[in-house]
Length: 107
Image 1 (cartoon, rainbow, N blue to C red):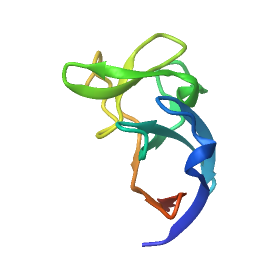
Image 2: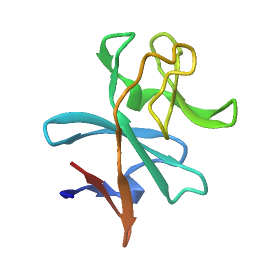
Image 3: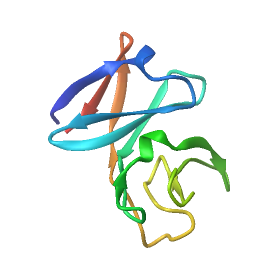
Image 4: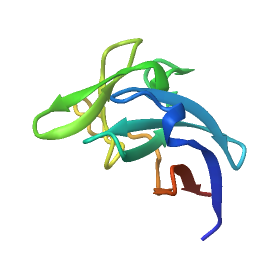
């Protein structure tokens, strides 16, 4: 697996997201849980047609950690990329790890 350093953990505000590039694609990184866990999904909202998911609100719904798209408020699971309102709609998920305060993602 090809790991790429994306940013420092402190660059991502707790319970929020930031956009980054990974292998030519926009991704959205979210700092969740107790503040040292990071999840990554594609930044493109397939229903809204724009790269905005990193600006969505992070929360939980139906027992899942989700981000609400700022466009149409659809909720995307940060573990699977599945849209809770329209399960046939998904966004890609990326493997991430935090080492020594740095966030790495698998391309």
